[in-house]
Length: 489
Image 1: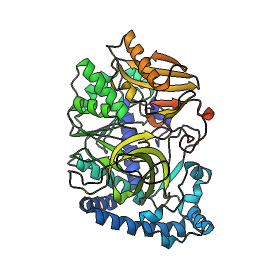
Image 2 (image 1 turned 120 degrees about the horizontal axis):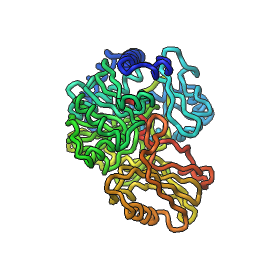
Image 3 (image 1 turned 90 degrees about the vertical axis):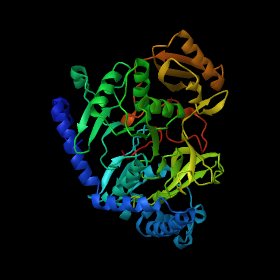
Image 4 (image 1 turned 90 degrees about the horizontal axis):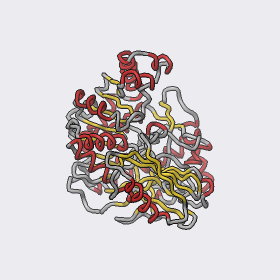
């Protein structure tokens, strides 16, 4: 935040609330153009009811202009098109777009300014960094207009979720802001701060344990949020502990989750505990794509945001029901342009018919996580999708798998009141059905599982990825997932 962290950490809570509120005002002034954003929201209210033909025509028109803009203003694409003999005017449809190469994150990291308009950042642009865990976070830029355009999609989603005021709903936020110094936790057990202009209660995701959840519950009950939003791993801990302790939670109009993969069982537990629907939102710091739930629960790709491809390993578009890699071309950011960008996440392509909500937006069957949420087990090969292991197990609030070495898996779990010796045995048996019997497995019951950068929870961590065989689909940087990436909220 803009204040000295030392001053903030030593201030009383009431002054910290003031500092958070002042920072919120400054944040909105620098990043949010209200008049422009409201105009875009009005346009999105209309375009959401377009036919599939209208969406296709819109995307083709925007793509032609986007490619021409990149060729004229973005050094990387000016050079790429010249070197490869690509005529920008020949890229007119989504099919034409597939003739361009995929963009790797390492290419951006190695020469980030080549993707900026004019090859250099401007003082008026907003700068932020991704929360990578490889030691090389990506530097990102956007203007007030670009940032406002992204937020207009967030506001439309909030309207889908029933918010009467989509810009400033009364909301409890579970995101990764470093707002609660440990000294304040010990002194007052106040794990939240107020952003009064933003009408929000910022909840720390770094101090959630079964012991502290009752305090969170009481704070939310006093605050009476219309919306609960943020990381699903944090919200579901509150939901599960409250249920196990018999605590009554507030009844918001909706919950909106983002920045991490939302598992079906997490959605179920949050909806039951808070008595409202969960709307999942997929977006990213690099403004690559926007995918979200509608009122009927379908996941819609927002076509006005850009072009979102779901590609099979052979590079062809995934068919309905097939899983593939998400590759994006966003129309939202003219300051930093990525075309056919491999963001590192996977999804299952959805059905072709129109959703019951009446919107002709393309659908995604499921958001399934990151490409690199896989482990290499020597006698099994690459193994992924570990979440089914935990679906039928009881006795724990959450768990994390750590690949310490090629021959050792360590499991951290936060037990609930029903945990016993059989719980650990059942977990190991379920895990061994996935990874075999030759790898060592140790299980540790802990009070809490540390969060990664920006407070995100990582269910699978590899500490030996440099020893994995290198393949196109398993040699990426091990960054926290997805939905990552967020970005807005």
